[in-house]
Amino acid sequence: MTAIRPLVCLTALLCSALPALAHSPADAAQARVRELMTRPLPDLPGKEALLLTVEYPPGAVDPVHRHDAHGFIYVLEGSIVMAVRGGREVTLSAGQTFYEGPDDVHTVGRNASATRPAKFLVLLVKPQGAPVLTPVE
Image 1 (cartoon, rainbow, N blue to C red):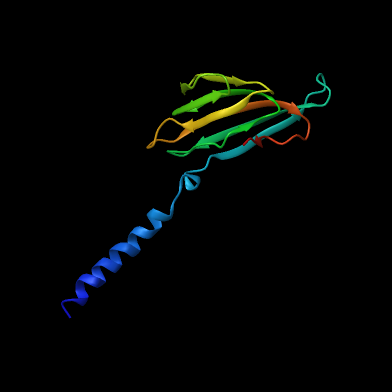
Image 2: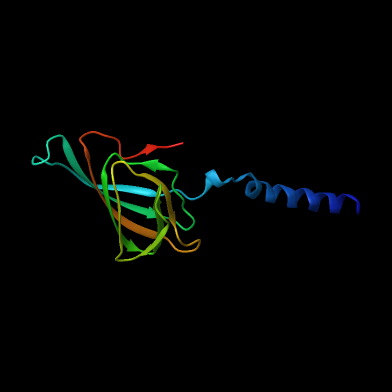
């Protein structure tokens, strides 16, 4: 019976560790996007404005992507790190802004903190009906 007790403890320890070992970077916290408003822009034929909030939980990281849009970002809470291809990473805090153009590839988008959430407002001026973002390899 005494030989079984260590085996049971080892099995319990391994089973409790398996979920943590199974997580990969792809399982990292995901951004939560909430659409606030979409409006056609009659003075800009074929264009619309889309207003969103994005919430990054601690540790959230976006995949590399692009927006076929002019993107205006305003940080509401916390800190985020942003960069477009060819540019340098910038860390933005509440009250700071970022811009990305329709030809930019958004290479870095993440929460600057592993312990605190971040929230930002996004205004996209894009072709009507176009997707919000397109993943880039």
